[in-house]
Each structure stands twice: as C-alpha cells, then as structure tokens.
Image (cartoon, rainbow, N blue to C red; front, side, top):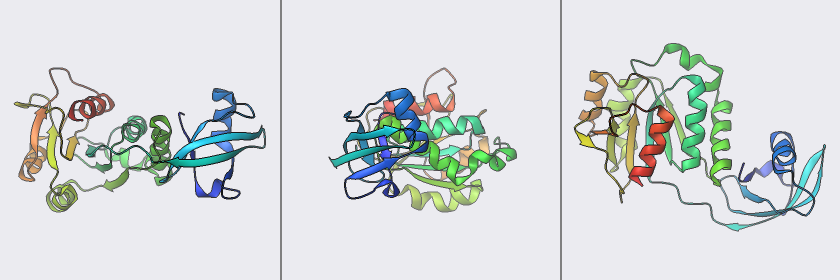
Length: 235
C-alpha cells in the first residue's frame, strides 16, 4: 500500500480522519507508523496529499490530512477482457487499476467456463476491493470504470461501437500478422482473450467492429503479464 485511500465516511471533520480495519492493520504491521509520521493519503475520486498521524492504537488511526494534489492522469487505455479464472481475476483487476487503465469490460467468451460467473469473486464488493487495492499500489484515487457483460455477441456487435467511440481497437492474439504498435498518441481499446485465446468466430466479430489483430511476440503470456506488456508498449 503506497497510498492510504480515504473515503468520505472516514472523515471526523474537514481535515481529520479515522481509519480502522484493513487499513489500520496495514499501517501498524507493514508501515510500522508512529505518531508524527506523514504518510501519503488520497480521497477516493478526489485529490491527494499528506496526512499526519495524531493517534495510532488498536482502536484506530487518526490523521490530520492536507489534500491539495491532483491524482495522476489515467492512461487513454480501455480493456475488453474475457473473464479470467477467479483467482487470476483478482490480480488482473488490481494490476489494471494500478497501471491507470481507464475502463474495463469483463465479457464472456467460448472458452470461459460458466462456473467463473458464479464465483464469489464476481460479487461487486469483491471486484471493487481489488480495484481499490490497485489504486493503493499505484498511488491513484480514481477508480476505473468497470462493466460486466455476460453475453458476448450483444456486447461486441451492438454495444461495443458506442463504448469504443473513436478509439483505436486492437485484438491481442498470438500469431497475428501485425506487431503491437508502440507509443500511441491516441486512445485505444485492447481486447485480451481467455486461456486458449479467442475462437475464430469471436475474432471475426471483433474484426467486424473495426479491431485489428496484433501480436506481442512468440511467447504465450498470462493475462496479467500481457496486460503489463501492452500498457508499457502502447503508452
């Protein structure tokens, strides 16, 4: 946790907050903070700054905060992500949030097991928690937009064009004839498939939506590794 992420309910008054639960334990056990320390803090969907530890014990952490810095700009990058295995989903959401991805759509695909959609990790509170963990890691305060689409064709064929807007569409697929572009100066939507990749019909649907298939190289990457590689290469 590189940022103590504050929420409106944490505030005792305009400048004083009290933290308990997970964030309190982290400050005690990992940061080993003491009264007088000044950790980095930020208000969810708001500004960032510094906090001064006024009190720290088993009951809570009291901070006096000064919030005057804007959060870092988001990458002009959106993801269409075939729903990963539940354990992987946690890591991918946290990684995308920490990298500054602006928007994420979790979508179904032929090779996505139906059981994944019934996992407790698909609970909105669980999804939100891992996005928050990514913000804390990346020192950001603004949550990426998250959308869940259980039906592939209605989303890709009907909703995707409006959601994509004028952004460049790229379909990550091993063996594609085009190499992934570098250092873009424009917004981009990248579609990353499930384990085993997109099937031919899904690739055709993306191509019909104007997406270009691109390759990241000869190695087959895990989803979270591909995400980091794409973000670094594109921006």
